[in-house]
Length: 382
Image (tube, rainbow, N blue to C red; front, side, top):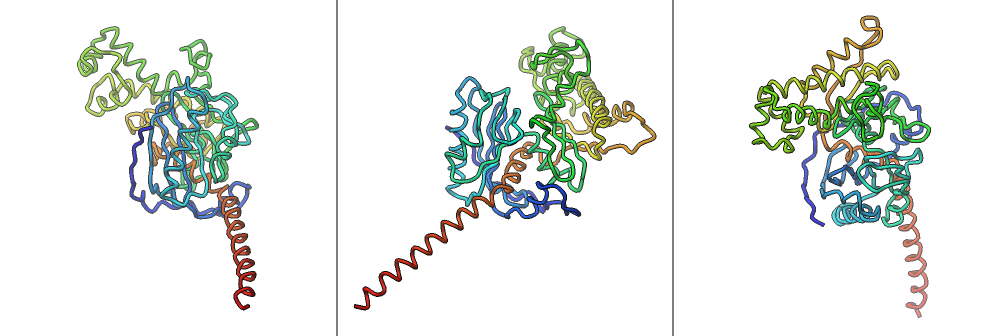
């Protein structure tokens, strides 16, 4: 297995938010979590990122490898995770492992109920990995992990009611309230991308039509650009020339790059995606009333080309506009590392189990040494 290793300098003096009250069990546990290194794993559709993260969110070392093909058995992915963790453990004193998986994770954070990019179907991932690794394992949805990282160390610090929206191939999301990730009764809360915003609209891979992610995501951005290019639209000549007529080579990052360079069609496409983003955020504000929306994922790299139109559409579509406080809409700060950092930090909540077990082993060993020494001493004096 080929891996990419990057020893990363500390990401600055990011500190956990000062918590004014202690309410939920998760928040209380976090205040007393041991300040020890943990490993975070972020499993996406194309790559697996693994990193050792300290208690302040600094990445001490990271590894990267390709995600095994989704047709492979679940054990192949588990083998990849175990290999990465053992590699990092050779150089770091790892106390727990957190997994951020792109899929539905049950409320107990043990089973991956469904993963669109992998062959996990009701897979008991936590128990399988815990049986192979010598440390506790925590599993959560990747958007939940990213939201936790942004609340702890990034754009959502000090926010008591935060919603994160991750714009990538589709749309993921997470809700964080009072220092606790809201996972719902069955663990699958935050699947905002599959809210229907256009009845009978574009078909979504989920099986429904008109889902939000079909209008505001990386896939939507690329689809619109390719359709214009395939129609030989005059507004698409710039991008057609850029890919030398190979329409299949058009990608989201390419559209963002051309938009920054002033390509009118690419700017307009990002504005369209941003406006749909603002419509969806207004709907979420009506339902959840958060104080802050954090926009992450690869498409958020477009920054104000995307988020500016989203803010404008949000203000136009917000229920009760002009008569209620408006939530902030900000870009995520941790970028592609958010899922990995969040998974590692959440794993610190279970790291105390490893520390206690390790302490008990040391104490047993010390007691045995004292007993053996006591047995040897009388024999030496004869």
